[in-house]
Length: 101
Image (cartoon, rainbow, N blue to C red; front, top):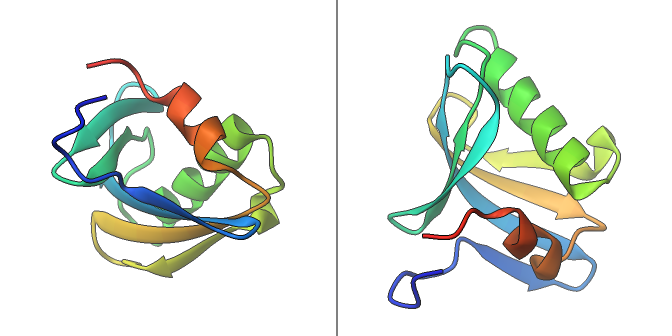
């Protein structure tokens, strides 16, 4: 990871706070690295009726091996820029999922 960029996550006890940038309508769900201080995610769902938010929650829960109910959208409901709270996840888990620069 590029040490010049701020990390888009922070640990708060047993909770991971995460800033993400979502690119909807991608060919597959994937992590794309850190972009301008946010974790960039490509998601297959369209940004319609909360589908991208739901897909984002499901994808992160599956990748971090936590229940979907542990992933809460705290900001950015109708934006590509989102903030999430993930209970039971760690910074080490998320760091292992990020592709190298």
